[in-house]
Image 1 (cartoon, rainbow, N blue to C red):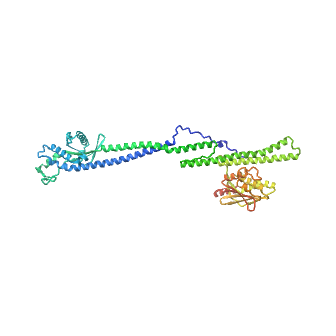
Image 2 (cartoon, rainbow, N blue to C red):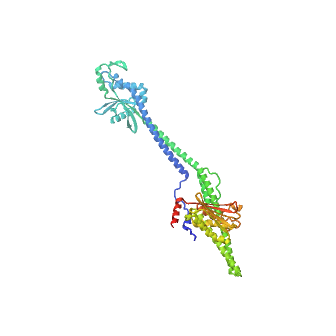
Image 3 (cartoon, helix red, strand yellow):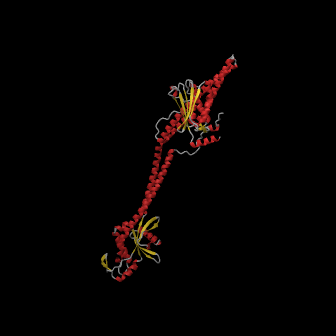
Length: 542
């Protein structure tokens, strides 16, 4: 009884169209990737540049403060020498000296700004001595705001230490320089030997006087940060320009890819309509070119399969029609009394029986080879189990013995295996050997030989005859479907034998023996030794 295929499993599922509303072109994918890369690059470069600029600004401002403070050392130490003995005009003397020093010192005016002020620590009030409105109104206002901020944060208490304040969003670097004239053991000033200290006892008074004086040296870094902001803006503008260029390049560079994809899509549509003409022309992309080659091979295989299928149906129809016509003709002859004698009627009945058997065998072979095709494509699963190869040999001999007796021919057994097991479907393997036996029986003269032995990891079934052998014109097409020799029936038997052997991971080969006659070798892989031992134990137990 043949197995009925599962219709639900055999029926292919119709593919549905992608219902996604958003379909992004491939050029936009490239453009999006380029935008992300550009934005990340600009972000990282900007962070790196800002960190470098901040370090550079710190170094530059500190360097300028160092130069300015170094320049004020001689300036502050000489203040005491500019004061008169009564100290009544100290502020005026200091202003005059500063004006003269700043006017003649490029180092002070170029490197940093200075502001001189007095501070009453008790009241917190301060008086700016330098600069004043006579020198520069804007400079004076800025200095007053800087000094006010410094006093609020207590920066005047730390001398010669670089500090920062936030002045209207701008970072100002400053240092506070205190006045503490050196005590001289000599009556002369080492910097100005022409000036004499009028009274050595006045040094304490001078220190008290200078304890309220502070010199603030500061640098506004707004210009540096403005330059950094300008660079960041330029970097953003460059990024925008790069994005525009990337958009143009993405369209230009992806056009061959889009064009090739569209060609492959049209080619696939042609294949779906059974138009298997190969795709011609050059495809730029390596991957798509390989895909085109694979699709050409696929189209060739599909065309070949389509031709084989059509040929199969034509040959099958012809093979089925021939016995059906014979059956119909003899059946009508019996019905209408064409055959008058009993012998003629019996001969007609024999023909009908023979043609019915032939038709039944053809249908069985067609169903079996169709089952092998479906199994090969994954639409059908052949049920398999572990089988003793010796049992298969005994079964096939019992099956074909009657035909050999009827033809008055012999079967020669040469079975050399006992405990060798193969994994497969017993009925299919027997049908495979039976078809080859039938072929050898048809062409043999006196006998057909069956040898079974183990070779490496396979069991070999060797079936040979003593007939004329395989004709050269048939040898290349021996296992093709509906390929028949001079005395062949329907050309399905050997094709089915090959399909069954391949389903079991084996092979079928045919050649002519040196002594004459055809020889067929069916090689089926053995199961693993552990499975063999398990099967042997089960067989002995039963």
